[in-house]
Image (cartoon, rainbow, N blue to C red; front, side, top):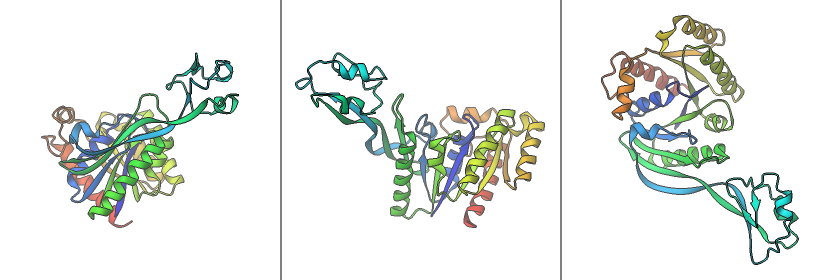
Length: 287
C-alpha cells in the first residue's frame, strides 16, 4: 500500500481540486482529508457519514463549586484570564494546570474537552476519512495523525492499494504530520512570487523528512515568466515537474456543481490532470 500526500506552501493553489480528480482516477484508493482547520474536499465528493467520533485535543480546568471557597487565587494566577467568579471559560483556558496545583482546597480538576470530530464516510470515489476541528482549537497536528491512521487502517482492512491524502497548507505541524512516512508528496503551486517562495519552503520541509517530491504548476499560463522560474528552481534541485495545468473558468463551474474536473467539461484541464496522474501513479510504483 502506498501513501500520496498532496500539499501546497499556501492555501488556494488548487490542491483539493487535484486531490478530488485523483480520487476518481485512482482505481483502489482511500481518501484522507487532513486539512482539518478548513476542510473542503467534502464539498466536491459529498460524503455520506457512516461513523463519527469526538476528538479531544487538550484539557480544560473545571472548578467544583462545593469545594471552592472563593479565595480568588486561581483567578489571580491565571495569565489567560480564563477564571472569573469560580467559573472557567473553556475558550480562554489553555489547560496549563497552574490553577490545579495552586488551589489550596483541591477544588480544580482537569477534564478532556471536545476539540472536534472525525468521520469515516463513503463517497462516489471510495471511502474517505475526514475531520472538523473546532473554532480556535489547538493540536490540529494530533488530529491529522488520527485521520491518517484511520485511513491507513481502513485501507489495510479493505485491501486498498493507495491512500490519497489532501494535506493542509503551509509548513507547520499539521503539514509535518501529513507528510511524515508517506511514499511521496505532490506539491501544487502557482506562478506567483509568493507561490515560488512557499514552494521552496515546502520542498525543504519534504526534503528534511526524506520524502520524495514532485511539483504541479496550477494556472501556469497566467504568468509564463514565473512559471519558468519555478521550472528552473525545480530543475536545479532535481525535483520533477509532472503537471502544468492551464487557467480555465470551467474549473470554478465544476466546483459549483460539486464535480471534479475529470467529471465535468473542463477540456485541457481534465486532459492535463489525467496525464499528470499517469506520471504520479507510475512514480509511486517505483517507490
